[in-house]
Length: 500
Image (cartoon, rainbow, N blue to C red; front, side, top):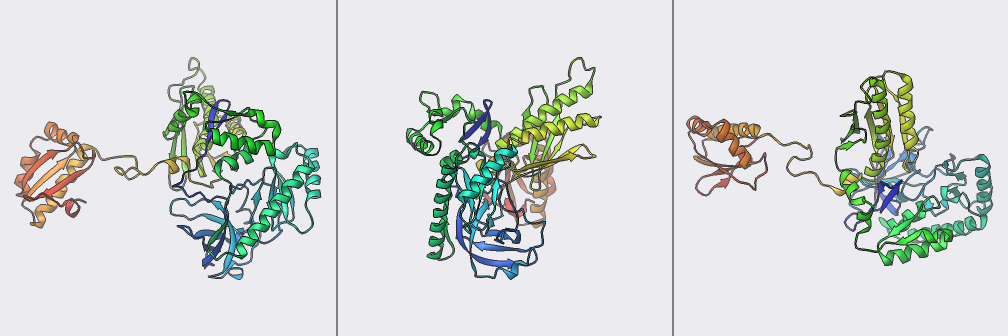
């Protein structure tokens, strides 16, 4: 599923059978281990990796007023109670105990999924929180009168001691009857979940979050969208049926795409997805942005490139224009690539505080369109902007690609000259072992060419120095920086034994 704003791709979402998506799912888990040192527990969900439950995400009832909108994908939930004093986790959990938990972050790399015991159930207009009693309004709904009106309506539909609710952004024009119907539906869903959990044996799933298409339409589709286009007639009919039940006034904006050109090609989506894997993003001005993901953070560097401004008379103005364009591009790329965690942006140095403030304001303005929680801090003394972006699933880059088997993920391979030196040292080890007599070295053609053109006497010198019978063969199927050491008449591979 692709989301376009102003005809530009800004988000890509996908479901695949091989990727076990459990975000928003509710499990009856069993506590595997309680770790007082980090105030957390590992919970067996019956999945490949145990879930991580921090003390801040236990269910403490109604101790804070959270008005951040959730949507069943973990946004707005978890990690918000660290500021207050919490009782030790070992006072609440013991190994072997069963506990109802919800996934707020997918498993990433070596880390298992992040969990919360403070369960929430999203609907189109409301988020139901069974363990709370607060009524919250989405922060994206502005206007004091509108917020007060929605709060009053929400309080009216919430029976005493039945939980809490958050009114979602799409509820701005909703009526009380609609809120009441949805609350009843969510409350019934919760009762069913409790019944399922009571009859289940941990670890076991007790509730699956909505699939991608229905979940995204529930959370996003509103009168702010010009159109929703589908290229499958079966899915098209499902979508129309759902929209007719929750927002009949939007039914005419749902369209079936037909024709010889595929839906994604028609709107340039495939091409933009491919660009999202590039480390360099070109700016219209001629400058460019370099995006480098690392284990700890994502670094982003801004460069003027070929852009020199009008007549090169005002370099500060050139730098400002490049930085402003880069700020807009960076926010788009963060959404498109679904980059989360710590992000450090190295804008081109600006002399005046006024210009630095303009760039920071531009960055924050465009971050406001992002559904994920983001925060951009002031420009540091080194000219860097530190940011955080909520991470609830692996990035697009991680989800759709694997580590290169040739370079192991570093993005670099040894030069032919380096490969030759590695071969030389390996042959010296073979000579020192005195276990081999005849060695054939297989290399990529570029390495063989390098020896012929730059070091034509190499093999002769090595034969003399090592007292080995040596030969070299080129093999176009070898990787550029790969070599094989084959011993004896049978040409047994002894590379691992002697190569460092």
